[in-house]
Image (cartoon, rainbow, N blue to C red; front, side, top):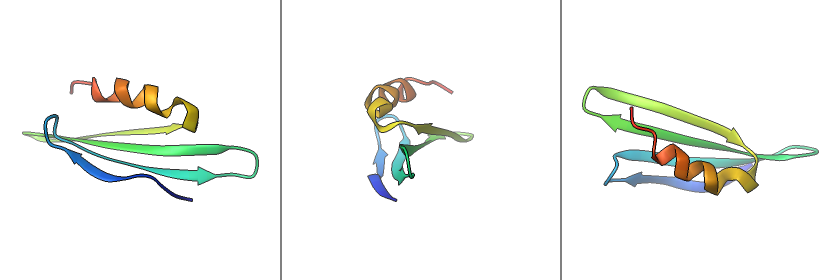
Length: 66
């Protein structure tokens, strides 16, 4: 287990993101977290996904408008 992506604040879209890689006995997963910081609160988006699908899913997550 370790960092897949260290925490980073995307100022243009007000997202705080980070990802942790988890290695199991027979598979690997990534726990990718996004906090969308909004005027009246925070929306949390959590993906638990295979590493090979992460880059495509990150693009889609950034497009979510709450």
